[in-house]
Length: 218
Image (tube, rainbow, N blue to C red):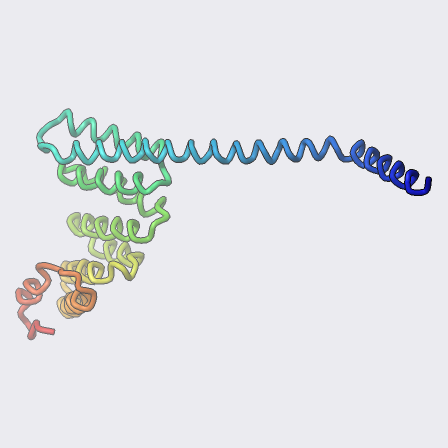
């Protein structure tokens, strides 16, 4: 009888526990199941978005590989850049689309649009290398517009992975400001870094040779 009473007491205890906790347990299981389902749904959604961004970017590449005189292709390329940046703003494709848009804008003589595209990459990108590329290109654009001091400031954010290119553009800016000694030092640094990292950097030695006032070899 003692054993039976104990079993009955255990059963009653289980019933009481279930009464007190069963609803929350079921809810917890349901929430966990919904979480798994929701996570899978979210992953599918993200995968679909990434695929859509990839397809649009490929279309953009295809269009920009066509004849630059094709006005319809240029217009569609601009539309695609807008679609990619609006709908996939924090993705790699958005950064690449803006960089490509800047190049197209420069080719079309639209420096204002090119500047805006590059500044957007600098401000919004979470990728240091691509931000660095945007800074290099913006600095070159600023040099073309006669803003050498501004270009030097822009170059300050370029990462070490692009140090050789950064030194090259810095040399261009110093030369534009009439600071030949600083330009020479920067170009020499660019060549040294390019050699260390096995990254060919064309035209720098010619600029050193043209400077001429001192021996231009390393």
